[in-house]
Image (tube, rainbow, N blue to C red):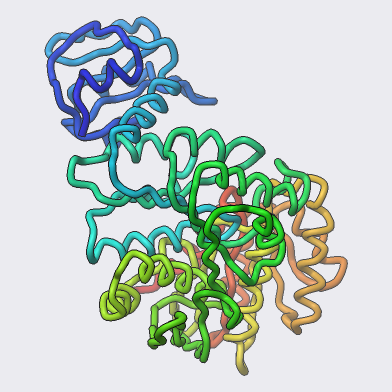
Length: 446
């Protein structure tokens, strides 16, 4: 919550109309804005938020604008600023400066959202926690989250994303984290960095701001970047040399069980998550939870009831067919992990890999998609359906059918199914792989 005085101090804006003095949060979306929110009219690549000011004022108490609009302001709070995006960021920075609690930033190439959700759920057992919603982890989503700060908030768990050099630094200037959790270094958004080392250096911009890092100790590229850092490094992973590590891992059809180990104790955990990558996500969250005094009973309770975020490692059963749906995003690192999980779950069933283009890979694009074909061939997965223009490169190593869009692929897939198959559906978000799942669900009552 913040006041009109907070808003003016943060943005140096000019009050055009004044009514409500306290706001619950900032908003940029008239579809979801609340009555006690204030609308920031951001200019997007397609639409300008100023087009929706009238709608916003009809649903909420106010708006922040950067140009004149032909709207009746009576009974509403309206503030004029030079730049609405910078004003939103300034508000977030100002509210953070007043916050006396702890800020934990979650960064890395893969697993950020699941890890953030796990950490927030564990810490919520003891503290009042504010977290970023979904994957709203950029220079808009993060300040929107900060606008929801309340007086009794004790810990913030914020996911920070990056596409290019300078992104993490920009976000850290707003959120000023004391702790960082680094999941791994992989090929996500490599187009903006040029190399894995470039990805690592972009993520490690956070080191100038934090005092303690929870790092994936099994990630050699990441650890190479931390070797000369003078701060406190706490490691997690599978290797017993880590400060916190997982052992005795047992992969179930609908979950994972393993032993979580610290230097003074060990205890078993189980979760409704699948795949080796989630062992790392869980272990990192457990490490943070233990560090902040969360008991093993509380951790167990959280893990046993935790459900994966939408489109991230979900399992569906449709007419005797098992679908491993992991289609929120894709890069070579996460694609390899998903294919390994498909192989593990295959058993004596027919396995089908339905894979969409991986985007933002720059000069690595063709080679990365060829590698998918190589992995499929080496793993013995002969049933391959592709979606997009880059995934065709996989045909260098494996036979398959490639379609321009997910609707065509979904219709083709549905015609081929006989029952009993296991299907992996994965691709970059822009490929809209969820439409394949929708087609498979048509006519099925769950």
